[in-house]
Amino acid sequence: MRNAFIDELVEAAASNDNIVLVVGDLGYGVVEPFAKCFPKRFFNAGVAEQNMMGFAAGLASEGFHVFVYSIANFPTFRCAEQIRNDVDYHNLPVTIVAVGGGLAYGNLGYSHHAVQDYALMRVMPNMLIASPGDPMEVRACMRYIINNPQPSYLRLGKVGEPCIHSQIPEVRPGEWVSIRDGGERSDTYLTTGATLELVNKLLAESPDPDRYSLKSMPLWSMKAKSSQVRQVEKFLTVRTVEDHLMDGGFGSWLLEATSIRPDLLIRIKIRSLDSKVCGMVGKQATLNAEGGLIHGVLCE
Image (cartoon, rainbow, N blue to C red; front, side, top):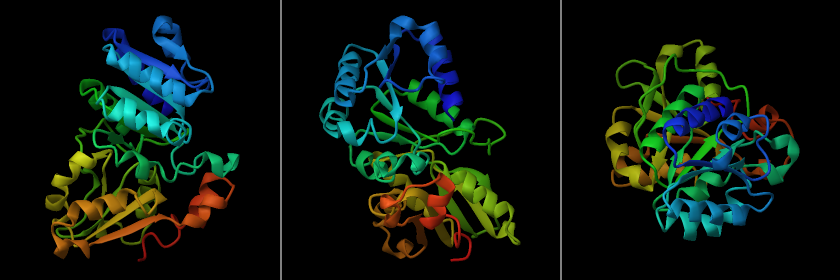
């Protein structure tokens, strides 16, 4: 995902002089193509995330579209006030690029977990969440964000995510992207972010793979709730899967969006991380399993 991000950013910056990349003293091994091609539009703000976000807001207020790149926990909770006051409330084109969503950096300790970031970002009224599930969705999200500059949060996996899509899909806020279709009025899994790979693999290994549809929602926000009822009502059950805590997460967002139709709420089943992972240290796969994202996903 990181390589797809930087490829799209470099390509866009070649024809758009207003695109800027700011890093918080990390990202090396990924960001060099941009720094080499556009050294006057590349800034290392150092280990000073609050200052980095304020700096990005200042550039954006002068007409730049600023991409701020860091490990997921750093450009979110460390500078939440600057995101709210400087970026979101002023509706500025700053894209917060968070690498290692969920438990991707779990072996560095719980300080590096990003399992409450949706909860923070989705209450910002102007913030668009972009949570792609594979490199193709990264490219689709980047193209949407570049063509529609706004406060946005791009949540990426750490490294090595396989392509689920054979081509770049069309994405719009709140719209479900089809990965596999089940029968009419089937159950469906709905993912956002890196859990797409997990569920797709489990369905492929299932003895009855045609029982379920699989959908992805790469773009969502407070403003995108109105389109959810018409999509939920197509299925008998909608099972959301996310590498985030349930409270304030993606599944909770879908319940809120569907609350105007109480008869549909019973169709929504949420699979998320158990809060016990907040105190754990380990590899991503181990913590996902401990948190309930592997065993039992297909048998509830």
